Image 1 (tube, rainbow, N blue to C red):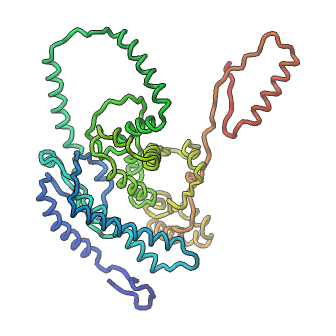
Image 2 (image 1 turned 120 degrees about the horizontal axis):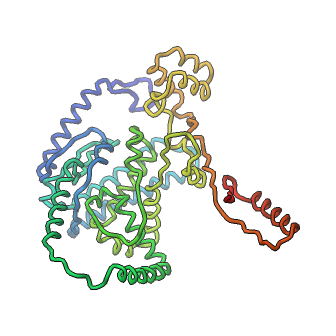
Length: 442
């Protein structure tokens, strides 16, 4: 480290040999993988930082959670108490009035983060995998943003997964071919008739039980949202909805998503819920019915949020803006104009125009005299904390809604009544919400 002797910051300086640090870290990680490899995994990968794209491409094998021993319960309780105390101290610091003590705040944040990490790591030891399935799966050993060693176990590479699935499919097909055919007791039409009545009965009963209805819907959504937990579960569901999450789309469309504040918060929430959820999809409904309203409502909100899709290939009004406007989302909190996130992807003239708009015409003139790489770097230094947003993120317009309705006039009405009806229609149209209009058919 090359230190700045004239700085008040004890950690001021910079690393002179990043390659050496990377090599030492990699060698240490390789040493740590020996213990993980002895667990029986087919493969182990090491990374010096969290690899979201690689892990997202993997499926997962199922696992079970054993009950902790008496001593383990006591140790976990002690770790949980320490974590609660650290979080309480940090919250108390945030609630204090007056000038903030940055050094104390950083220390409290570090203690709270370390305490949470200790609880999470201790809980991992209760998870167990089937030895035969472990032979087809592996693990990632990597460093998180704070330099701590993290291990993701039970991952299955996508190119290896179909073989077992195909074998299982052939086995089922062969068994079905050998099964003797029997004449059904009820014909197709009668079965449809009877089950239609059954469906109506279930619907009216379910409609009178909001908590059960919420749990049933979440049972359908959770395996889709948490596909890394339930990727191998294939169940039939009575609820007919189509659930898609946008997690992989976010990462595939923005290779810098891993650095996003919003993404890190989402992944933190995902990891929290993943630890709480039962490991078998068949156990979901009983587990959900045992939970309190707070757990159900918060988990439901996360699952719904995971399905939101605001990705668009053009700068135009989008339905996601209705949610954004309702929540008053400040996008400048989550997106910064950086070199890799924006300036590398636009022309130098655009960089200069943006700098001129956000900083000053003089700064824009300086950028125009630079090469593209230097201009992008300079723009990031000048604008990272400026709060500037590109036009597509400033566009908060909602698509115009068009509704179709019929207006039938009574044939016996006279002109006076017709004029009154027309006037009433004009008033109704004037009172309609912005962005919505009614269209009469021909």
